[in-house]
Length: 275
Image (tube, rainbow, N blue to C red; front, side, top):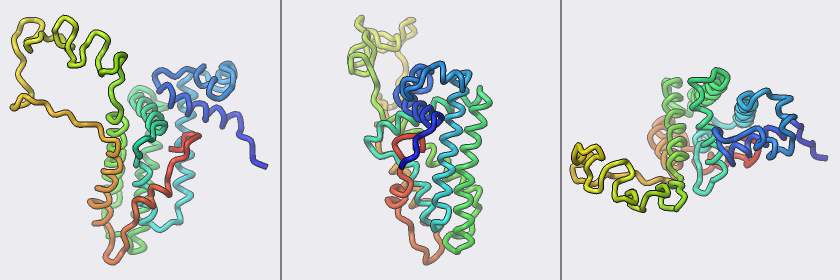
């Protein structure tokens, strides 16, 4: 007989679904109550504010991550490292996972202003870097990895993977606009307003609205390059991490681990926030 989830588990699963649907800034206690089939008054009985509930949710996410990492503690070091790298890969079409991490990114921006959130974020950072340090130390002891500065290498690897994830989730989605062209209702598809002036307040001839004259081009050719969103960026960076960090790290004769196996080993679950 399967064990029924506790009320606390149901609430946390509701937070997870509500954050995916609404994001941090817009989610309300009522949204969370609706997602977990609990009353708003029950949520307030356990948590005074939305902030208290979200801090508890962060604690849950990090605790789940600790459990998942611990489950692979006895795996060979090279496989553990591949799994850690694979954990950060977002495959195209992982819309729900991206939506959840966008909400987490919003939460991270509160760190400088909110001590309870900052404490959880610091705990998460210690977990990630500490995991890599442990993997590297084990690999060096077993002769799988070369003798390197494990703290420095861990900091570099975590910063690289976390930065790639942040870039993908913030750039992979197109602009959302009411009329579908990426601009507001008063803008044409080329970004100009109905009166012929540009959306940024300049006139159609390129001069500023205050009459100060044409603005100099940011590019000598008169063309501004805009990076296209890349839905496979985390995979690209993971593959580069293998070439630039993992392979040079391997001791002579050590077999290179598989990124695909690493992705499969740490594939995120869909519910409960174990991301």
